[in-house]
Each structure stands twice: as C-alpha cells, then as structure tokens.
Length: 249
Image (cartoon, rainbow, N blue to C red):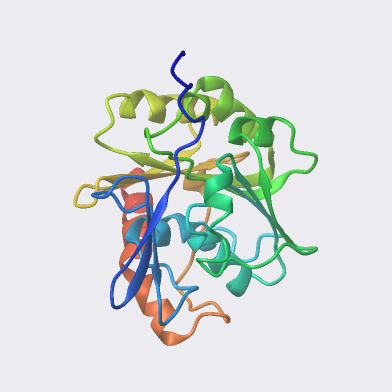
C-alpha cells in the first residue's frame, strides 16, 4: 500500500502559561500570543509595530489581512477601529478552527474571516483596501506565493489611493533583501523599512501613491479608543517608526 500523501496544512497546537495562551506550529516558535487578562491586547512587539499604520491613517475605512494566526491584530482592529470593515484571509482551516480558543469575534457585517490563499485574496479583491496587513507565515515559513514580485504588485493594485501595505518579514531569511527589493519595485520606492535587530522582524510600510517620506505625522497623540496602558505599550514601536522615517528623509 502506498504511503498517504502529507497533509496540505499543518495542524497548529495551543499551549498555556499562567498569563498567556499561545499558538504554535513547532514547540520552540510562538506564532501568536494572547494575554489571558486582556485578550485584545497585542502581546508581541512586531504586531505593535505593524499597527504603526495608525501613524499615517488613524481611521481606515477598510482593512485587509493575510494570515489570522491567533487573531491578535484582527481582534485589536475590531475593538479599536469600530468604523473599519475588516476582512481576513487564512489558508489553513485548522488555524481558523481555533478562532474561539483565541476569542476571535464572530463574522458579521464589518468583520469576516475567509478560508483563502492570500495571493488569490489580493488578486481578486472586489474592493480597495485602505490598509493591507501581510503576515502570512506558515509552519515552513513565508510561502513563495506571498513573497513573489507578482504578489507585491497585486498588493499595490488592491489598495485605495494612498493606501498602505504593511508586511512582516524575517530579517534572517536568506531572501530577505530580495523580498524588500520586490516590495520597493512594486511600490515604486514608496516604502519605509523598520528593522528590529533584537527581535529579528522587519516591518515594511509601503504606500500606493505618494512616497511615505512626504507624509506629515505630527506629534504623537493617543487615539481616543486607546486606554493609557494600551497607548504606553505602543511607545517603543511607534518611536522606532518615527526614527526610521526621520532617517529616511
């Protein structure tokens, strides 16, 4: 009898500590982390950096996401951006099946999760996004379909004028520089690279339209929906973005 083919999608598993619930594909790597005392908080620094789009667009009307994980950014946006319509594409049905474990909201008129390939999601999007968050890692890393030149060009095309794509990359990946260059080419050099050498994540902000360097952020002000604790948790990430923007000018 022939061996059964390997499963198409890896099954994630959940671990618990006294303070957190975590999603894993392998034991020594945390895919997503939820604070049990505050399930909508962003526990991982790179997710707070990705939310830096709020410095450029504090109230996007439409947000697209590639990659659900434990739903950290999806939950955060649902709670703190009540006027935004949020659509999340997740290719792995086993990840979607854990949405209740991580207190991900039910689908409704302004929030939905679809089982779809991220590349197809942006290529066939019926409406333009103001913000597109790309964090589509699986058990094997970043899929080729979510790091090709065609994919980043489709991300550019899926955005509204002056919309922002925010891409999470691993700086130690062998093709990291090539991935940055592909984003740069797709967005006609309108990108801002924010590297975190300590964590190993790099966040790329890419704008459809005017170069990011032309945007005026102004003084940092706490969004109305952020309590003091939430706002304080963003200070480090937002300060790094502002420093990168200053150095890029």
